[in-house]
Length: 136
Image (tube, rainbow, N blue to C red; front, side, top):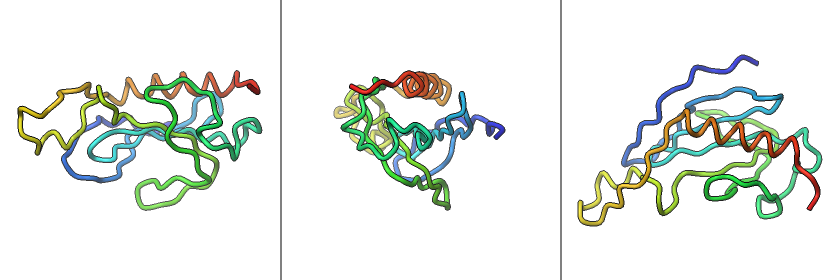
């Protein structure tokens, strides 16, 4: 599978769903998504028997904010993709959230705005951890 073109993360004050980058790295399919107010990333671990069908709370992977998703499907744009996906988001206390656009200035946190390129580096790191995953 050829990687799609990497698109820029554009923060918004409303929810949406847009694929920023989809491809494979070392045999693992991944998606980087823009949910409008913040980005997320997902890796398909279906072929890894140590991770397949495990709840994200049972998986010891070091990633920004920790894993927040594990499910047998992923909603991508207007489609549903089957597999076993683990995922994480960039909507934590030090992260920029698009809702700040409509928040009074004195209450804004001005957190980090993540780029698609930075998230891709996290995706590659998570996939490396998946490849080297051991029972714990």
